[in-house]
Image 1 (cartoon, rainbow, N blue to C red):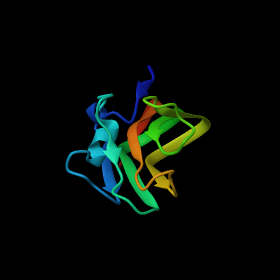
Image 2 (image 1 turned 135 degrees about the horizontal axis):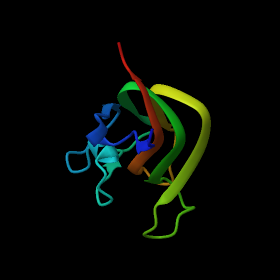
Image 3 (image 1 turned 180 degrees about the vertical axis):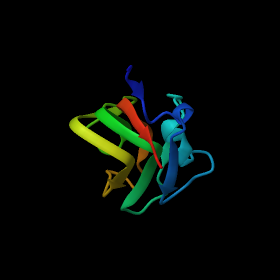
Image 4 (image 1 turned 90 degrees about the vertical axis):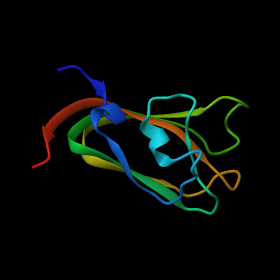
Length: 120
């Protein structure tokens, strides 16, 4: 079986919950595969979003691209990579507790892995 980006909207994945939404930067942008789009929070923390795969998946590598704090260089996204062992899921929940400014943006979430089975 070949590994795919399980968080791609083309794989049927959806953002089923986000605690804020801006019509110019909706939560669906997180998984649309377009590097020019993003979801932005609308102030106040914590903020969260939930990604639903609509199937059982095994995640081996998770990558989050965002702007949260001062650690990044201007114009450069922060990349957080998480390697997992036996990371089985049907949903992913992300909670943003704080950020440097009143706003944070999530440009993409990708999950490299395999679809294990459909939900019954």
